[in-house]
Amino acid sequence: MKDFFSSKKAVYVAVAAVIVAVAAALTAALSSGGAGFASMLSQPFFKPLKSAMTSLVNTLEHAYGYMYRYDEIEAENERLRARIAQLEEEYREYTEVSEENERLRTLLGFTERSDAMDLEPVSVISWTASNFSSSFTISKGSSSGVELHDPVITENGYLVGYVTEVTGGASTVTTIIDTTTSIGALIYGTSDTGVVTGDFDLFKSGQMKLSYLGDGGSVIIGRTVVTSGGGGVYPSGLVLGYIDSVAVDSSGLDPYAVVTPAADIASVSHLYVITDFAVSE
Amino acid sequence: MSKRRNRTFIKVLVFLPYLILLFLLQSTVFTRVTVLGMKPLILPIAVVGMSLFKGRITGGVFGLFSGMLMDLAYNQPTVEFTLILTITGIFFGVLSETVLVQGFPSFLLCSALQLVICSACEVLVLSVLAGAPVAALLGTAVSQCLGSIIFAVPFYYVSRFLNRVV
Image (cartoon, rainbow over the protein chains, first blue to last red):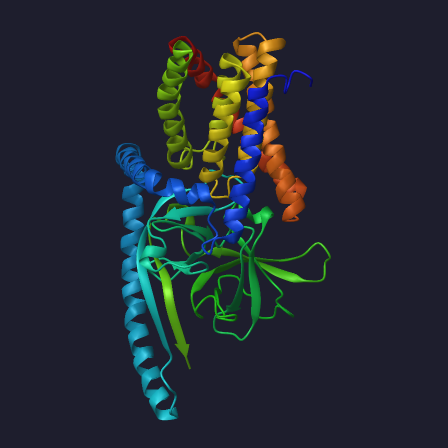
């Protein structure tokens, strides 16, 4: 141990590390975007390099997929064709139901529910290197109107995560499966509410926990879980996922549901940040 | 004095692009390529290589910058790995200057120890600050170490090559 800091230079290096760490913690705590000074300083330099590298990786992945997964892709194509046919049928039914709904709303004097959202298209630059958390960096930051806690969705309206760090030209998004996530939710088509949270035991399988369910009467496998809109952070009705299974916690008293995200979180590339939204009933 | 300054300049000229390349690999390629279902950690292993072949000062400085970049790759404030990799960079440098032989067994041993230290710190931080269940974290930590340690083989040769060049 005596040798460990026997030279002055080694001590200087260690002190520099402590200063950097303290400065980073302070700037992250004090900055409005939650970003440390290293993020803010390095982002303009690394953003184009990371984007180029990610494009290269994507191209190689596609090439690999084309060469080695042709049969798999062909089978998937078949499945998707069948799915399109099924969805077209469902769409026809949906149109009929929607028209009927419109007529009934008018009849009952309901105000049309309007979810006006301002969307900012973004692309994923890079993912976290951590095996214990789930987050990624997106291509836009405060200069494009992105703010802390803005929700991030896919083109289908599936919730992917929320903004947890903002710099001028890039932002960090923490996904809904991350263990720090906690979102007010409700089971679609019922009035049952709960809280969707990330869970370490479910993290590896890319799933979430829906807890505080009350009696859990409407928890049926396959049902859709959406945001409740409570708290005003997320708009209501964003699809979180589908109930995969139901279990009881370690105390044996409280039921919870395991929810599989609707979005394929591991492979998202082009997304939308909801920079503003208004809900009126 | 100027000879020494030139050597430092050459070191920066070689190690800076190396460090940037490692960061890009860590934050783009090795977030997609997984081993045993885990994203391998390559920057901590590179720090071991630098410490073992170049000693405590270069190891410590390389550890400091690697740690900052590792924290950036983790999308977290530059605290945890900045401290860990600087300290371990100096520590493995001291070991190589005193008791260790600069061979592959030493490199493998130090890399394994480095990965265990990094993973243990992650587990500690998450279990203490986030109250996460230790059992679930330990499983991930062990897989992370096993999935990363295979990179000790290429990094041993890369570090040895860099040591010869600079």
